[in-house]
Length: 165
Image (cartoon, rainbow, N blue to C red; front, side, top):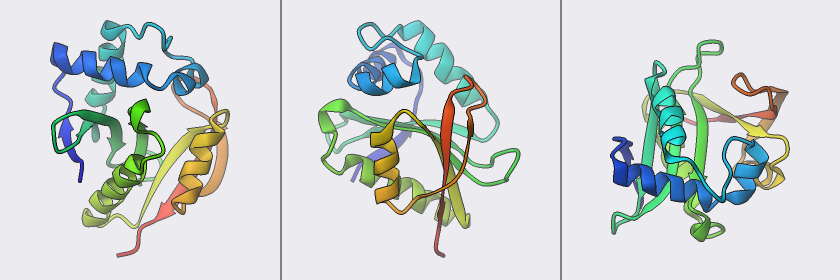
């Protein structure tokens, strides 16, 4: 079972995180934030520090039993508008795609929010990432809205999942 640990922003961690982003070129191109051929570590660190500084937000590294970085998660405990927790990002290392790692991480996040007595969780998926929409739908998430993201104005599908007690 993967473990989640807070990102501490050490140089070695940031190098690992940049490699994680580079291993997901389709996402990088779709999001338009980073060139997967050369992910700028300093800019990535600034962006993630800003994310981590948001009230109620956690930036977490997912590591396997050997300590290898297998994913990155950005979680918001309480959205200022709807009061629900949100998954801001769940990224799995490209070498591990289609091996169940994303499902494991999603289940860990859902359990985490369920234990905190939340009855639902939300996320936004970029409209142009059909593979991500398919992934979340396969886990029982449902589309509830379409709108642009707050940070970059990109078209997104807002999804919700009820968490049974």
